[in-house]
Length: 337
Ligand SMILES: [Zn+2]
Image 1: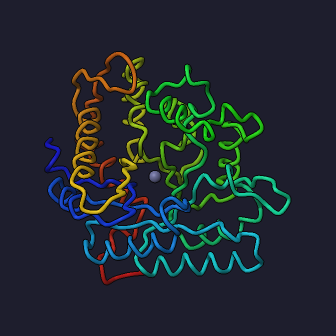
Image 2: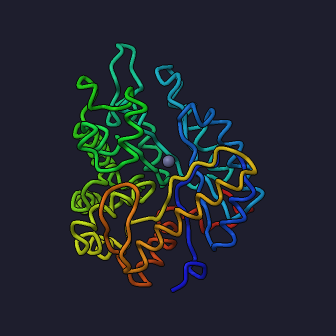
């Protein structure tokens, strides 16, 4: 099976600005894209992000779809719930295929007493109930890679060591008073237990990237959940170095529950370098998933083998699972809502 002929979806990347090169690259490589809006000020306000996503969608059509988000600023105001639900309805009407909820809930958003609120906070129930009732897929990014709670020398990835060296204020190991990794994951699971009909796509392997057995257990417990691979394939490579069969078996067993995604950031317009970087990531990850060759990565020492996944499994993780997770993907332009 050839990379170019397989129909593919990159189910999680971020167009913070339009970039023609990336759109053309996707087209040439038989990729559709899902750009994800996030309640993260560095990406611009949620409504600015929605405007950009909507414009790209109108221009690129089914080549590019988007996931909307909502802002937690003013979340303590009396009409926040009502306004948030209205804004989600509006974004869906404009073509959004789902909603994204971010790690700021759990790690930075505070209540009137100054306490951090958890994703399972009952004050968020009406929004979750709405999403569940209306069958709106929810992409969730909770917590961080487990490395964030480990000392630098125990981190498995070079990227994480460099990032947390440069950004010590985000290195949770240094902040024992902040919520633990385990408590954030437990809060996520408590939230999901309350919404057995809510379809969720757990970004970044649900922050359980460090052990596919833990991801498997999670998928077993929550039948409506999917995971995406965004920015975490290296962690699967790391596990394949130690136990290739375990990682391969995980993909075979959960072939209906995994979505391929990169988490690539498109931060400048008309920059061809960004398109090249994305293409490089696509090809490297394709090689790992598709071929059975010996490989290595700058992220850690040693080598590992590609998983050599069967064609029908690749078709699912690269495309078909995204269609199941986000039913609105199947609705063509002009058939909004
Ligand atoms: Zn992302």
